[in-house]
Image (cartoon, rainbow, N blue to C red; front, side, top):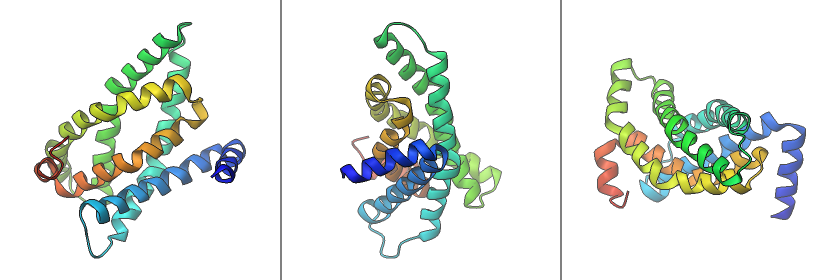
Length: 187
């Protein structure tokens, strides 16, 4: 594991953009595979769905997340480390999370070839439930992320936790709001 972390750090230093895209893509695909096999218990893996998740993770989510973390570092610069963390988490959860969840559902719908009325229906069925469940998971993750993790490694922390979160989003994207609430009653 140490060797893998050393390799990751080296790649991140040499090729930060490509490394973040590759890791995000891979972990989004893992999250989808977990959703398909551990949650949905499918018998035939849907590779196009996994490909859409990987494309989204690498080419859409990674660049946006990395840019967001850099913006937060530039904008939130109080001398009080605790106030910095609170402000960053607050901005992350009130500005970025609503955007990121909407972006996920719209992007997936477009990649699936859905029409605009179908995309609107998807957002109406899934957006608010996903956002509310986001607020049950991500604020504490981001407190740790913004308080002790260096900026260049924040996406890796988010991507690691996102294996479970992306399983949830992938499942929710394919099942809709009602089915998710029935299956995952604890959310």
